[in-house]
Length: 579
Image 1: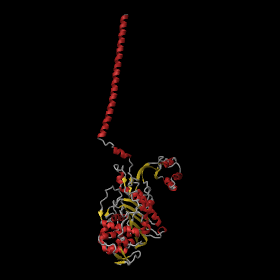
Image 2: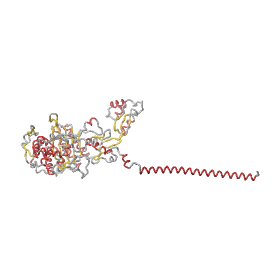
Image 3: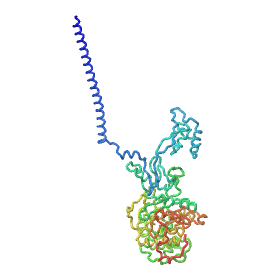
Image 4: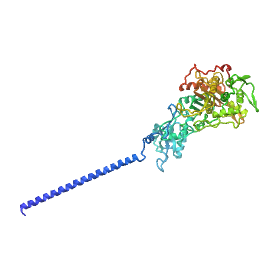
């Protein structure tokens, strides 16, 4: 092959090779572009699928709402507050101390150290723990709570012991920041997570409903008034060595309960064996013969029926009434005769029985029924006692004894609602533990004429001014009320050594706003009560101390320039001693 031909052949080959390389590069670039496009398309498809899925969930699925998300942030049980927003019951997260003997696995020792050593270390953190009891519990190897509701710093101290079997589960606990105050109103939450005995039980569904637990349950209770009532009741209970006490403060126009106390109380934060014995509510669940506190009710019924029209009319009072072999007596002689105001000031059984006899059993029965005394007391609490009510048509002796509070047994709440009707213009309303907004009070039912109520305000004020209730007088607050000291029934008759002492009051009597009931169960004569056991000496002073404490809190300031006008009946009465 000649040189030129060889050169041409080489050149041709080189050109051909270059062309082939160009083609290969072009194909590679094209394939790379397609691969990038496919990747991009894949990502776009994934993104589009995700967007469509989100849109579907938003439009058609049960996506969580703002309410659902807010509910998840709320405690599992709503708060309970007083009428002013003061917390009475709250739920909060807390640590517990749990014993898990299997923490180190099957076959492993339950504890690193001896049970006695661990128990001693726990007692150093919690001095009220019984180290021997805890040591025995640890040695038995039974899992369970060693302590409910412990502080984070206590959990840290226990963690430093290095015992894996001591665990700290975080749980939601029910906390009562006021301790035992208003315990019988609130009740408590048990280990089952449900409310028991008080408003915790009444509101159980509402407090756990996700749609409602964001707003607290508002009670009619005023924590300040509740504290004052409990404080003075406890003082009176200790001064007289009574076995128990009860009290209630009621708005006469709405039926709202501002305070309700039953002593001894229990601590809803810790329901122990001692606390369980005090759960019984003396205000709403225990019925008592409340004695002479019934006399104004009987007199009001007689005035309303037109049986008593003349306050100056006199009734014999110096000899017992003999009815069917039963003798009705007074504690001591008040003279040959008494008029109606004097009979209340001196607390005469004999005169009250005569007035009731003239009224008749049918009309007295009807009045008591209208006041709800034949039924369980009306209030939201589940524990409500059934009155002991004389059956059938009331005989003369039944009518007479009921008129002064014997032979019929009701709760202190029955009495509070009756007194509210007697002083508020004559309207009976059920009691309530729910806050009533202005203008929303239950209409109630008329029991007494307005004129009868006005007369009773005079008479009740006079009892405190010059009668057995003098120790309840609080200067400037115009207190009116009536004492009642009744022997408790027992086997074979009444027990003369066991009394129920009660003072039923209202204030201010020129425009009654609140009823106050104070009761002591089996008070004793002590130095603090001048050796006396009756209501004039022990429960009347309780009311006399409570009213000045709560009046200003409720917007009622002492004012000596106002009072009930008793000028038409004051000349009829001399100062009395009575019970």
